[in-house]
View (tube, rainbow, N blue to C red):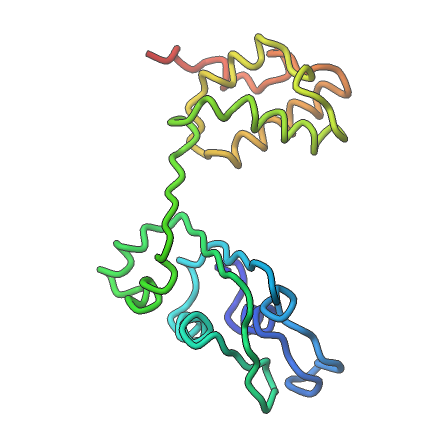
Length: 194
């Protein structure tokens, strides 16, 4: 959500009708319409503007919305999941996130600890990433030595950093199993975990 300006985010979420703005030559359903009966993930909800927060609050509260240029209200029949890396409680204190919207998105809260606090997930994440990067490569596409290096790293960039590391190493390995020599030298300079 935070990567899009309000006007684009609004048309992406709610859709628009032909003629709603210059270049809108045909109707376009929004993500809410496409998610009917399913689930819509609103990633980085903590970064949306106050104006967009009001529009989103209406959807979450009334389960209704209007596509841009529409003359009738539509019903939103989708489960909404919101994710953010922002501290929304701190944003409430700073008045940058609406309190009423906070209580609408904070129904079931799942806090995911950083990767350095759940190292047992690292081998599974690597296997999944290798499967995507190497067209379905298995867990044995990485050596025990390389896995040991990756298990000891602190991951200040969290899962995205691990994904970048795996993508880079897989590129350097050129179809072979990833070995420690394929990992960036900065990974090998880390102190052992205590």
